[in-house]
Structure formats: structure tokens, C-alpha cells
Image 1 (spheres, rainbow over the protein chains, first blue to last red):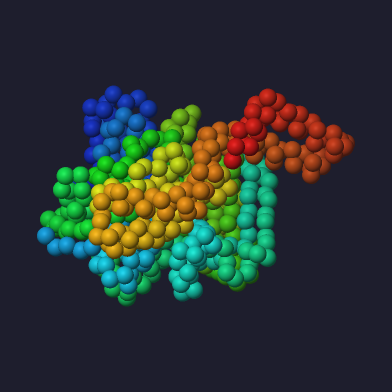
Image 2: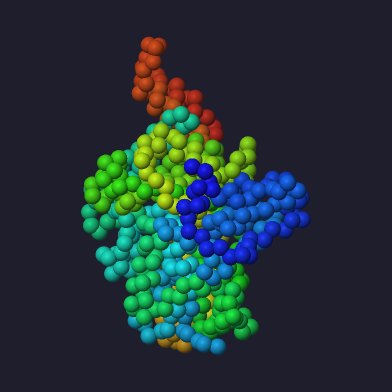
Length: 90
Length: 429
């Protein structure tokens, strides 16, 4: 089962604005890319231009990326009231 | 500005237990929950130990929508191509009152919130708290969107990342070594199949933990809990260990590899995954417990870092609920004295220190050093399984004596200075 298929099982209500903001200057200087390896939703990736991006729409709201990024690039808030993942089992 | 007596930020177990304690006390209490309903943002492995909670919340458990009472504790040590399993059944686990249950939070928390609504507590969904309103150092309310609500006391019950405690200046900075990531699938299976595969009676449950090669040398392990009509199957990995992993690989793949292991594959066969979720766990123990009270403010549950990894058991939900009740008691006392200053609310910490929560967290204060020892998660499970395989196995060569086999195995993997040092360290917990 692909990770995208797993995420598709969850109920999401997505805002148009991302609740995760990245500091591209910090990301450019980063060699380890902790976020890519740590995100359980596999939502982080590099664009062809070498910019770090995150698909916030599938965010499981664990906050792991914010903790794993020791350089402090990940500015992470909860999605606005009423948005984000809605677990039915938990 | 509208004003109530108490605002509880977060409608999870800590916040709801606090509201429960405060219901029927004459205080006006509101719970602000950011999800569509209580439980919709919550995740556990998981299993809840009810025994320590009965003294705090005696009436709650009869009607509670818990899953199965756990009658079997299973520990599996995983090598690369083998595994050894230890299974504990006890009559005690199968007698009422049952000590522990498997649990799904979206069901349980929602039920508890509905119960509170019947008791006159307002649990308001879809309400993020965006800021605290302060008068000097004193917290006098919260901001949610455009709205401001005043209160004598604000309770941060917003979980492990507690932005409310942070805004109140009551949170320690995040460090990877103090957190673990847990992620899991909920796999639907019919109850009869679950009971047959785990050899359980009706409503009986199993809790299985896995350590060893499944985490690829990282600190952590796997878990499997039987719910009424599903299995919760997941993995926990320390974030520092995850950051240091070589060669680098995306963490989510670990669960797929785990599901491919024959030990797991046969247990989940025919099941369909219905949810994928992830959550953080605090591993810092008592060392990172923040200050839990301030002027007009208390911090409870995960927000206060009240959780513990005891290697074979992970604790958090009981601490959340009990700390919520204790905070409720401290608030009732503060109300009687009409004093919500930090020195009055410090009574909460006193209650916490005298409870099982801080006593256990103190007893296990060295467990963090132990779980940082990666040999525990790679070398030893492999060595034990390999030795057991040699004892049990028969191959083309004439079999050596059992005593000789065991001595050889012990000499190879355990009779060395490193293991002796690990043993000395292990004695501290």
C-alpha cells in the first residue's frame, strides 16, 4: 500500500493557506534534510529548483518535522479552527 | 469581554477529566477543542491502564466505550530473520475490575465530551486558541479568532506541542532527544478472526510489543493492540535516533516493512487498513517537566510533559486524566479562597508530587539513558533469538549438547564488558 493511499483513507478538511512555513534560506544551507526522512506522511520533497516544499494538505499534525529540524526552519502551527485531519479511530 | 471561571484549552483526556472534576462544582467551565469533536485530533497506540484511575474517576468506566480488556501481554524480540516471543496470560487480567483496556481515542474522547455536555460543561469544537490575554504576568483569558474570553484560570491541556503553555512561558524548548514519533495503521478485522488469531475469549484483548530489527537499530519498537473490530499496528522511533540513522531512509517505510514480516503478515491477513495516523510522545521524563502553574494558569497532561517510557510500557493517558482531576481540585480550592495567583495554584504541583504520576516518573528517571542505548534495540533481541534458534533447531550436522550451545551463545554475545556495563545501567530502573 502506497503512502499516498494510506493518507487518502483519512478525512481532511483543507485550508487554502499552509499551517507549515519553511525558511528557504535555512533549507538551502541544510545538508541532512531531516524533514524528508522524519515525516510519517512523506510530505516533504525538493523541487527541481532545489527548494524544500511540504504538501500541508496531508499533514497528520504530529509535529515531528518541527522537532526533527534542529535548524529551526519549520514554523509549524495547528491548522485554523475546523481545518486539518479529522481522525475517526485515533 | 465575556468571562467564565475556567477555560480549558484542549478537549483531550486531560482537559475532559479536569472538566469532569469541575462539573457540579458551581463553576462555569468551557472546554475549547480545535477538532470537529473531542478525539478527532487525538491518537494513541494504544491501551489505557484504568487501575490507577479508579480512585480519581470512580464512576466513569462502566459505560465507557473502551475496546477490549487486555488479558495477554506479549513481548516479541525480533532478529533479522527470526524472533522470540514471550507471552503472559494472567487470571488477574481477566477479572473485574479489569486493569487495562485497548482504546481508540476518537470514540472514547467523543463519548466523554458528550457526557460532560449533559453535565452542563460546554465543550466547544472547532476552536483554536490563538493567544493568551495577560494583565502583567497574570493570564486573564484567551483569544480565539476575533473573540476574547476572560477567565479566572486558563488550563493548558492542548497536548504535547502545547502552544498555550508556550505562550504562558511554561514550556521548555523542544529537543529531538526528548521526543519519539509514533505512527500506526488501524486495520479492520472481524471480532471472531481477532479472537481466533490471538486465542482470546469474547471481549478479551492482547497487547503485543516488538523490539529489535524492525526499527533498524533505532531506539523504539513496534506495537499491536487488538480493538473490538480492528488492530492498531504501529511503530515508535526516537527522533534523535531517526535523525542519526544511516543509511538515510524515509521513516514511513518502516511500517510497510514491518507488515511484510511473517510474524505480522499472518496476523493482519484479510484485514483492510481504515486509518493512518501519527503522534509525538514525550520521552524526556521528569527531566523536562516544565513549571506547571503560573498566575491564573495551570498545565496538565501531555502539555506538562507527563508521560513516561518504561521500556515495556508507555504511560501517558492515565497521567493526563489524573493530572486533570488534580488540577480541578486545585481550582476548587482556589475558588474557595478566591485566589488564582501562582502561589495559590501551586497547590496543584503539590498534589501532583504526591500522586502516582510524579512518583513513577521519579522512579523511572533513568529510563531515558537506557532507551538511548541502541544495543537494546538491535544487538540483544537478535542475539536472544539466534541463541534460541540454535537450541531449538536441527540441521544436517550432529547436534551439539544444549549446555554447550547455550554457553557458546552467551560467551559470544553476552560475556563481554559492554554487556556488563549495560547490565549495570539497567539496574538503575
